[in-house]
Image 1 (tube, rainbow, N blue to C red):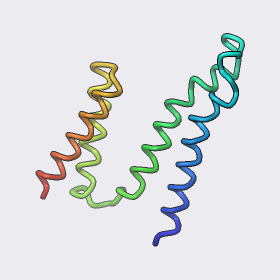
Image 2 (image 1 turned 180 degrees about the vertical axis):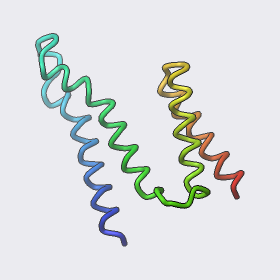
Image 3 (image 1 turned 90 degrees about the horizontal axis):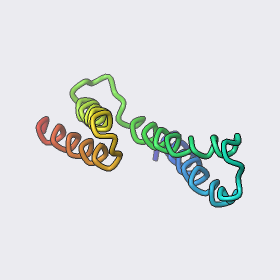
Image 4 (image 1 turned 30 degrees about the horizontal axis):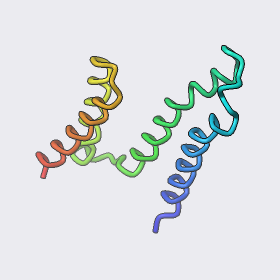
Length: 107
């Protein structure tokens, strides 16, 4: 077992849980509109996505471009479709399909 990977996974999971639980715990419906806490909580969604992306991508990083190609293709598909359609769901599905097809194509 790789303790570094386990540590990163636990930290990413804890951060993700905190980002999701914090708005519920603080009762965001009682916050002042435009206050610092509202702005902070509105940034937690993108921060959670970034945290999960980093946790998912770290084990795949390697100097071997052939092994990294599916990750690059999937990430580019997510970014491209999100920029075109502004749909997180479609972007994630396109990224998963592109990653799978690249993995299949490289055998």
